[in-house]
Image (cartoon, rainbow, N blue to C red):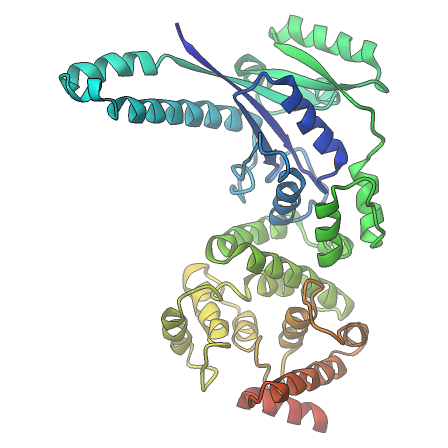
Length: 434
């Protein structure tokens, strides 16, 4: 008899992750019918043309929102495919194979540790057990809201989706139950679709309306898990949405590819900082009529070398031939510039120089230099004091904001009995004279 592994996959943009999403997940757990419940933030969606918040923000909001629900698994499968569309059929096939392989591996590992197995002829035992273990069926249930019943026919390869997975539809008391049943019957008849419903509490939460409120930095405590609300507030995730939405779809895809590269190289907190710098840099670029993509690229990549071993940072930094003398606090700048040129193919000298000098500043800074330096120091996740006035100044005068920021740096260095880097001293002197 085949071993059946029942899996529920609840995917969505989770932009933001709100209490309505959490209700669905808690409802799935209460059903007590699944071996695995997988929560999957959406990557690049072929059916979504509107701007979507960067994947790592959405993934982190989801992680925070479900961290008190130990029965579920958070997946980064789709967000780890930047530049590639997240087709549902691909996700089904991937998890059928992955879960089947994991089951076989774990069972073989258990069997191989038994004394009875070790005392018999391994070749015969392997063949026997493999024939049994490979007889496993992974049953995928795709969890959606009722709107999926109306839209699924427009998805990529809907026939295959409904053949290989069951649809598990959330049904709320305030929805048109008759229409839902009619659509379900239609899909069952035309595609032989397997469709079940499960009841969850009514909610009036709209992700679109939530984003509009959050863009205005308005609190939405009653509609978001507390940890998610705090995360959004501390990092001003939605405040710069309108600025980011000015970038083209192609540019946003490229930034998602860079985001994945940064994610691969740095810690979660450093990735979050890099996203904050990117968004704030884009905002300043828009305010000061500068190239948004240059600002975004430099912002997301500026700390890509920060977590490298120090010896490697020095080695890469010296290859640029810039920023001397080096020290452990600034080597990641030129090291990152060399890294993105060598491995990511970034050739724009303005972007590379902005990375080199983003910690020190320099004499005769370019507008991009200033935007990145200020975004790095002023992004809202920073715990520093006295930033409000500098932020207000940066909206109208980058030179003056730089002076104010460098004055704060001088005070901090003096407090810690440290001298500023020669490039920083030169920048302060130049700005005072200009």
